[in-house]
Image (spheres, rainbow, N blue to C red):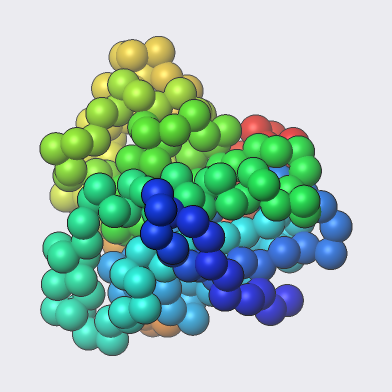
Length: 223
């Protein structure tokens, strides 16, 4: 199932992203990139969501730039302007809500690494219907976790102590504030355990188990 690049308004400007659609109308999911950018792996994940019946939009947070080396990815992530990112994310949400193929008009978000942080950040800005993060925890000073109203599903790796530690603390803080949070830590898994293009990090069991949990979570909250 192959998608297409689309453009959508972003606060008076234009943003773009990769849109994958199932044969029949369905709820929507925003798929947020790792620090590499909108590469073939993220597009493949969007296609996979479409195969499960979700309209999936992966916004291009780097506006055409894609990293192939870790240092380049970190540089692009640091250069990303958060105010512009917020506008692009809002534009992506509105684009999906206006899409005739999205029914019911519910939108969730899912992101990986940097995108996992952006998924939580998006849920803190706008009333999303569901939020999933893979090994992500925002470091942004602008991130206000109390703004999250959506249920949250969080996936972390046992062998990624720094990110997992921050994720656990965030989950505890959200629960203390009365938020709906489900957190899983995958034994024997490293950071980026879902990324099949990184064989040194990919963990098949954790990737498949987390995928099944993510699909069930979205079907429960976006139906």
